[in-house]
Amino acid sequence: MDNSPFRRIVLPALLASSAGFAALTWPMASDQAVQVSDRLPEPLSLWVDSALITHQHKEFSIRYIGFAIMSSVAIGIGTAEAMRSRQGRSQRHQSLLDEVLKAAGDRPLVDPSDIDYAVAKPEAAATPLAETERPTVTLDWSSLVQGTAQSNPQASTPAEAGILSTTLEDHALYHIQGANQQQCLALAVEGEYYRYYRNRPDVDKAQRLVQQLQLQGKKAIATVDDSGYIVWVRESEPPQQAVPWPELAIAH
Amino acid sequence: MNLKTLEHLWTAFVEGERDFTGINLAGADLNHWSLARVDFWGADFSRANLTQANFRRANLKQAQFSDAKLSGADLRWADLREAVLVGADLDSARLEGALYNARTQFPKGFNPGEAHMWNLEPGATLATKDLRERDLGGTDLTAADLSGALLVNSQLFGVVLKKANLLSALMGDSDLRYADLRQATLMLADLRGADLRGADLRGANLIGTNLRGCQLANTNLEGALYSDSTQFPRGFQVPKTLHHLAPGASLWGADLSGARLTGVDLSGANLAGANLMHADLWGACLANADLSGANLLGANLLGTDLSGANLNQTNLMQAIIDLPGERAAMVSFNGQTA
Image (tube, rainbow over all chains, first blue to last red; front, side):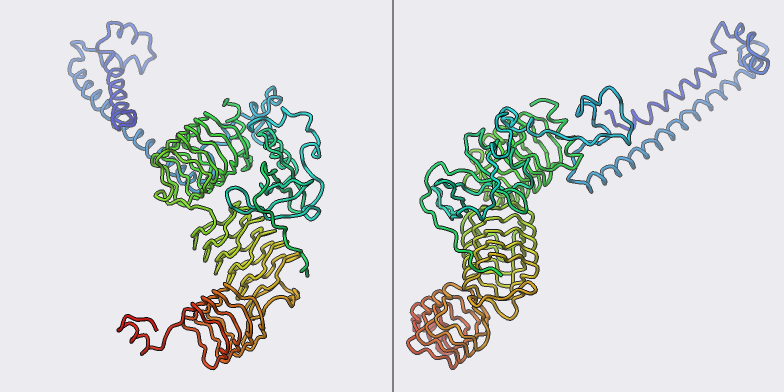
């Protein structure tokens, strides 16, 4: 019902038409019209006088009512046309918006201009920023992940957080087979096997992942290489099989 | 779940962040959100309203969806390995091509096969599947069929693809460091720009493989097979431990067991004493080759040209051999084997 043509086009047209008719015929019905016409300036007062139903102006008044009817109908038609054209523009705008959203399918359904940057950065709330002065929001994801990393303040340095400064080549690599019979790459550190878990692009993300795993009760470490960090998780049970990674004898 | 977390998510997303590993969105209202390709590894969506949400190609590995509303959600090609979907409402959810494994926990009565999901496990059949730009590092895909699969720009660090069929697979720019590709068939595969440092390609089939621009430092290529059509990186010195398959090649005593050698031209080659057990020589040319003392136990010799070959003391037990036309017709007619 909210979007029906009756509500959006016909009803405003009827209201505008009625209002126009009422305004035009008010002098004929009102007792105060004579007093009002006296106070009006010259052309308007004559016009109001002519509309009054008096014996002198009877013929003219009938014609005036016809004029009022025609005018109100014209107002109604004009209003309907204006509303229809406005709705057309709105529909075109909506279809364009739909196309944009379809094209940018990997974006969330939120307009960046709707984002309250003051909320994201409370210290900026006091001074509203202009459109061009929007801050680059730096977020601390540790406050959002499950079991916050910040709750473990003692693990402040990478080494304490399980980040090893050594590379993969510094450790013995194995292929281990766990209880699920599936094989995977593993690192041997101090007599324990660490199963490959995930690559991380930088130290912050590696550290956060290691801490997150530690909070889940898993012992994790990360090694560094030229493309980032590799996170490894300790095998809780000794593997059924551990085959050393082959000698890397062939290099060019 | 508070509103501030959602606001942070919005803000960071708009700023271009796509890595939300481990984020806690339990109970959040994300219906109709478009979060395609976003990394939600280990995120918590328990009891969240994700109706009609778009998670296409999103990384949802180890994510929690317990009692979440996912009706009408788009989860196509999402990674749901080890995800917990117990109690989740998956009514009308689209899951075609979504990845799962034995540790993915589905709602009671849900059949991932009927939803056209792809199971990533050893021996999986994933031929011609689109697995590009995925994080499949460390996955065990031993003996999987990935022929013709699209694995461009994928994270395949430490992946186990031993004896996998990667015939004509597209793997350009993939991270294959420390991958186990022993005896894998990489015939005609395109690996341009791939990082193969530390990978184990012992006995791999590299016939017609494009390795241009690949990083091969510390790559173990011992016993790998290659041909004149194999394209190595510019300036790469092919180690002598590789087997060059070509007419007249010397492959005396080579271990080619289980190798896919379909259509290979080895005419006049010296294969004396070679191990070709269970090798696939369909349509190969072994004319005038020396196969004396070679082991072809269970080998596929359908359509193989053996004219003039030396088969002295060759083990052909259980080998699959097609018979001449009139003989085959006779066998068929009599219903007997030759």
